[in-house]
Every structure is written in C-alpha cells, then in structure tokens.
Length: 210
Image (cartoon, rainbow, N blue to C red; front, side):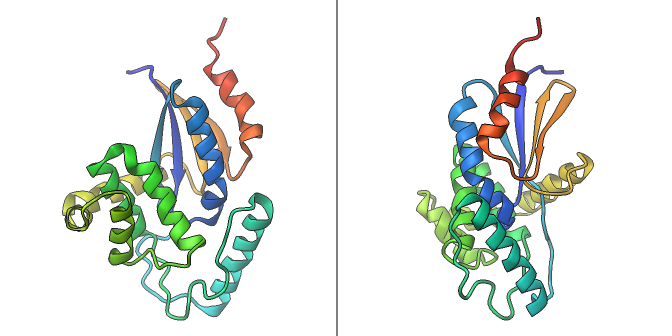
C-alpha cells in the first residue's frame, strides 16, 4: 500500500457550488501541488437525466446559483440560463473531462474549469458534444481526437467508474475533498469552504506526527 499523500476532489462540472469552489481548488493546487498529488474524481450529479427541466426545478436551481454568487462572487449568466427544453444531464460534460484527462492528463483541471465557466458564466449548453469539443479545441486539442475519445466505450466505462467510486466512497454531495495517505482517509470538507478556512487543516495533515 502506497503512503503517497493524495487530495481527492470530488466534483461535477454542472454543480454550482463546485463552480463557487473553483478559486478555492485553484488556490489549493497553487499552494500544495509540490507537497501532494491532487486528483479529480467526477462525482455524477445528475447523470443520465432524460426529461427536460420543469419551470419549478429551474427556479430552484437558479435560487442556488444566486446563493453561490452571493457567497463566492463567481460570475453567472442568469438571463436565459437553462432555456425551455434543457435536459440537465451531467454525464456528457463529466465524460468530456475524463476524455481530456485521458488525452492530456495535465489539462484535466483547466478543462474542467473551462466547462464550468462555459456553463455558468457564458450560458453555453455543455451537454452537447459540439460545445465540449470546441472547449477542448481551446486547450489545443484536435476536435476529431477529442470526439473519438469522448465517444469511445472505454471513456464511457471510465466515466461510470468515477461515479461508482464516488458512491462507494460515501460521497453524496459536491464539492467534497478527501485527504488520503495509504489506507487512511480524512474528510477535509463536504460542501463549500474558503481556502483560508481549509488551509490550516491541510497544513496540519501534511505535518509529520512527532
């Protein structure tokens, strides 16, 4: 059993609190990337949804968006968001992130952030393969290469594995951050917390026991 220290970030690209948490995970990466491995686990917020969103559920989600905006200052394109007929299926953008990570592992976090920004701040439909391919192209990836991986059975299975690991880990909401060393796991946060709030706990976890 390896004793490597790993910070697992359980998130979904269409989770509004994960968008709010985006500057926090960026600060964690900037501060701790040289001290521990930081890994993304796609949680599966609403994978496989097939029914269009109802006006009531849209209002409920927009309420959460406003709350995230107030607390974190992250930008949102509220007007025209999730138009009539929109199907809130989080599997395609999650699969896209995994496909990008498969092609260029170092791009997985930047691409994840691009999908979030496209959905929340620009109002793009990130459930569409064409949108996801255009975002991959922004990260210097050939659209044809991306789409081949995105549509492959291997990446579809990898995506389901991410969702399964999340459930088996007992994670039921996002963002969730878990610190792992060997077989020992420590919950850092379940839900949004600021970097300043999390930093002392990370520092303590990284400090060797006397």
